[in-house]
Length: 109
Image (cartoon, rainbow, N blue to C red; front, side, top):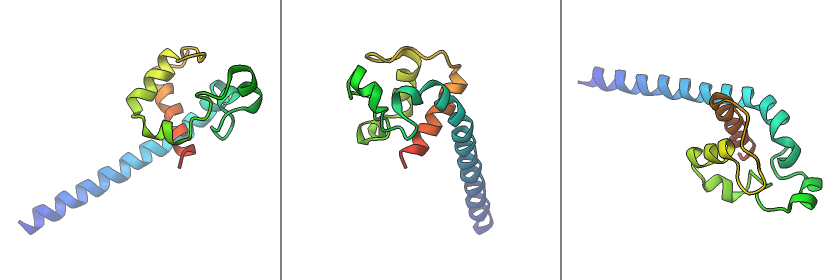
Protein backbone atom coordinates (compact mmCIF):
# COMPACT_ATOMS: atom_id res chain seq x y z
CA UNK A 1 0.00 0.00 0.00
CA UNK A 2 2.74 2.41 0.96
CA UNK A 3 4.55 1.61 -2.33
CA UNK A 4 1.43 2.56 -4.34
CA UNK A 5 1.15 5.85 -2.46
CA UNK A 6 4.81 6.64 -3.12
CA UNK A 7 4.36 5.86 -6.84
CA UNK A 8 1.28 8.05 -7.00
CA UNK A 9 3.09 10.94 -5.34
CA UNK A 10 6.09 10.49 -7.63
CA UNK A 11 3.78 10.48 -10.65
CA UNK A 12 2.08 13.67 -9.51
CA UNK A 13 5.42 15.38 -8.97
CA UNK A 14 6.61 14.37 -12.44
CA UNK A 15 3.32 15.58 -13.97
CA UNK A 16 3.53 18.91 -12.11
CA UNK A 17 7.12 19.41 -13.24
CA UNK A 18 6.23 18.60 -16.83
CA UNK A 19 3.18 20.85 -16.70
CA UNK A 20 5.26 23.73 -15.27
CA UNK A 21 7.86 23.19 -17.97
CA UNK A 22 5.13 23.29 -20.63
CA UNK A 23 3.77 26.55 -19.22
CA UNK A 24 7.27 28.04 -19.13
CA UNK A 25 7.84 26.94 -22.74
CA UNK A 26 4.55 28.57 -23.75
CA UNK A 27 5.61 31.77 -22.01
CA UNK A 28 8.99 31.73 -23.78
CA UNK A 29 7.38 31.11 -27.16
CA UNK A 30 4.70 33.66 -26.38
CA UNK A 31 7.15 36.48 -25.73
CA UNK A 32 7.98 37.03 -29.40
CA UNK A 33 4.30 36.74 -30.35
CA UNK A 34 3.33 39.21 -27.62
CA UNK A 35 6.02 41.68 -28.67
CA UNK A 36 4.89 41.49 -32.29
CA UNK A 37 1.11 41.45 -31.85
CA UNK A 38 0.25 42.90 -28.44
CA UNK A 39 2.95 45.17 -26.99
CA UNK A 40 2.08 48.05 -29.31
CA UNK A 41 -1.08 48.68 -27.26
CA UNK A 42 -0.48 46.78 -24.04
CA UNK A 43 3.15 47.85 -23.57
CA UNK A 44 6.24 45.72 -23.13
CA UNK A 45 5.39 45.18 -19.45
CA UNK A 46 1.64 44.63 -20.01
CA UNK A 47 0.71 47.79 -18.11
CA UNK A 48 -0.41 49.65 -21.23
CA UNK A 49 1.32 51.82 -23.80
CA UNK A 50 0.90 55.46 -22.69
CA UNK A 51 0.63 56.79 -26.26
CA UNK A 52 -2.09 54.28 -27.11
CA UNK A 53 -3.92 55.10 -23.88
CA UNK A 54 -4.22 58.70 -25.09
CA UNK A 55 -5.74 57.47 -28.37
CA UNK A 56 -7.82 54.51 -27.16
CA UNK A 57 -8.38 55.36 -23.52
CA UNK A 58 -6.97 53.42 -20.58
CA UNK A 59 -9.69 50.78 -20.37
CA UNK A 60 -8.30 47.32 -21.05
CA UNK A 61 -4.74 48.28 -21.87
CA UNK A 62 -3.31 47.12 -18.53
CA UNK A 63 -3.41 43.34 -18.83
CA UNK A 64 -1.37 42.52 -15.74
CA UNK A 65 -3.69 44.13 -13.20
CA UNK A 66 -6.12 42.51 -10.83
CA UNK A 67 -9.00 42.50 -13.34
CA UNK A 68 -7.04 40.32 -15.75
CA UNK A 69 -5.70 38.07 -13.01
CA UNK A 70 -9.28 37.29 -11.96
CA UNK A 71 -10.22 36.04 -15.43
CA UNK A 72 -9.83 32.42 -16.46
CA UNK A 73 -7.59 31.38 -19.32
CA UNK A 74 -10.72 30.52 -21.32
CA UNK A 75 -12.11 34.04 -20.84
CA UNK A 76 -8.85 35.65 -21.89
CA UNK A 77 -8.39 33.34 -24.87
CA UNK A 78 -11.86 34.36 -26.04
CA UNK A 79 -10.87 38.04 -25.86
CA UNK A 80 -7.63 37.32 -27.72
CA UNK A 81 -9.44 35.34 -30.42
CA UNK A 82 -12.50 37.55 -30.88
CA UNK A 83 -11.27 40.95 -29.73
CA UNK A 84 -13.07 43.23 -27.30
CA UNK A 85 -13.96 46.89 -27.42
CA UNK A 86 -11.40 48.54 -29.68
CA UNK A 87 -9.14 45.48 -29.66
CA UNK A 88 -9.41 43.61 -32.97
CA UNK A 89 -9.74 39.84 -33.26
CA UNK A 90 -6.42 38.04 -33.28
CA UNK A 91 -4.80 36.70 -36.41
CA UNK A 92 -2.75 34.27 -34.32
CA UNK A 93 -3.45 30.55 -34.43
CA UNK A 94 -5.08 28.97 -31.37
CA UNK A 95 -1.69 27.59 -30.29
CA UNK A 96 -0.05 31.00 -30.70
CA UNK A 97 -2.87 32.58 -28.69
CA UNK A 98 -2.16 30.13 -25.85
CA UNK A 99 1.53 30.93 -26.03
CA UNK A 100 0.87 34.69 -25.91
CA UNK A 101 -1.46 34.17 -22.95
CA UNK A 102 1.24 32.13 -21.19
CA UNK A 103 3.59 35.08 -21.60
CA UNK A 104 0.97 37.55 -20.35
CA UNK A 105 0.40 35.38 -17.28
CA UNK A 106 4.17 35.38 -16.65
CA UNK A 107 4.19 39.20 -16.78
CA UNK A 108 1.48 39.38 -14.14
CA UNK A 109 3.52 37.51 -11.53
